Amino acid sequence: MMWLIPAVATVILVGLDQITKYFALVYLKPVGSMEFIKWFLNFIFVENRGVAFGMFSGQRWFILLLTIVITIALIFYYTKLPKTKEYQLVRMVMVLIFSGALGNMLDRIFRGYVVDFFAFAFIDFPVFNVADIYVVVGVCILAFLILFVIKEPEEEKKDE
Image (cartoon, rainbow, N blue to C red):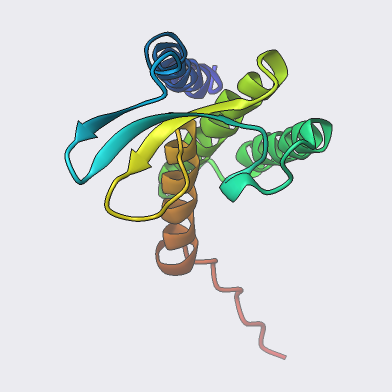
């Protein structure tokens, strides 16, 4: 029963990602782009056939395989995490990262590309989507937790 909450959270997060991509396909793709918040955020429809920053563009099967491997690793490590309260935030962050990976993987499987549509107007930055936000925010929080919050238990010193 421990799997129910993360599974429901994943379904909700992936659902939100896919709904935003649906709206981008229906309303943004026909016009290409539109200003959303002047000098801050624009909507620009992009068919991203690569990964971050367009790397590995056109290598759909390699990207899918890589995503599957990462997904399996996330699930494996999620199940191996200690069931203590201090690791609860790590678990939530892993669900966030997993949801982002799954949302973009669904795009690659069913469309052959990832739908990207958010673009900062004030900086030259790649166009991104909700799933990308999940992954980036999740990885940043996870890095912070690993570096500054989660402490490995000190091994008891044996008297010899």
